[in-house]
Length: 237
Image 1 (cartoon, rainbow, N blue to C red):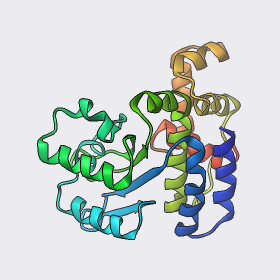
Image 2 (image 1 turned 30 degrees about the horizontal axis):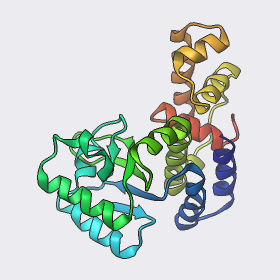
Image 3 (image 1 turned 90 degrees about the horizontal axis):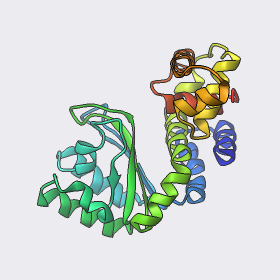
């Protein structure tokens, strides 16, 4: 997670959403990703779209989202679990109709990507969520290998960038974390699951969950990933 910690330091030193965005993008290639789209539909009338695909693409994509035709907004931001994206993952999306598949194929060609994965920050069953589409030009096999090595960092990148764009973390002081809470968050940041953390610390899995729940509460984080990102950004782990 050294790159994420370096990114947190850099983001903390810059001001303004645009500078945060450019700083975050500079770290993206280090994680094997080439394109990224951020979509915030929490304000239904004015979708927020950010990407490294250029202004014209952003405007066209915003129009597609506003019309309700975008399959990513409908099928990925309505759920918290990750969804594989991109034309190379078509086998995972046979439930979609031809118009949606055509849009995915066109978008993949325009963005010059083949594989990707969604990271949802705030799901909404009515497709008014907040989240990311992380994309690459890798094959399915290559992307699976990258995901196995970098998914915790991908999630931390998304949460850190979102926090920097919204500036929510800088507005309120946080309660101090206990040693056990910091330990549990640090292990989550390293990609360990609850059972592994419990084994490392010699405590029950339910105790790990309790520490993580309390840490999320102290950091006012919505998810475990968000808590990790906030803790890294604040230098707590």
